[in-house]
Image 1 (spheres, rainbow, N blue to C red):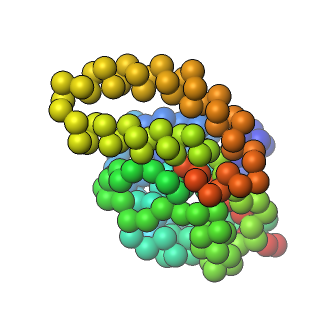
Image 2 (tube, one colour):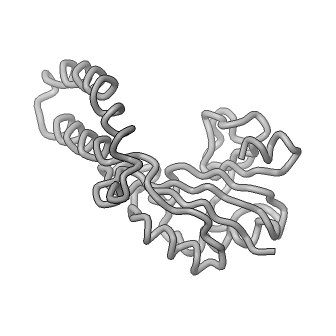
Length: 193
């Protein structure tokens, strides 16, 4: 997507803000956060047909009540030949903004966008099994243990995450069976010409 931005393409950051993946990405979110250019709903994008060269979307589709409608809206607003990168949790704890409706396997992701008319160029795992297990354990600790244990648990999470979980995932994520316990899956899709 960065390359498309650098070439002057119109790239939508669906669910973007307050961070910004690239200064030229047009961020759309349901609320007016910092770095949000357009306030709108993924189910009814406030954009004209065929106006986008690309879409970058991280951790949004689990929050959408009707992901099929949102995928169709992406198809409507993308130009022929446009590409999109979408990643969505598979094994992660509930996290609501504003709610949390579903997670996606790599195959569920693939089918979602194929139904909308996209060509799936790639699908797979982008955040691996070690992260999936670690976040489930951390969520359990923070949800079901006394608050007194939260500070030491946060410190332990920081150390364990950086020293063990991330390096382990660098080894596990490329494995062909990483999808079985993946934290997050992705699709790279294109709209046929």
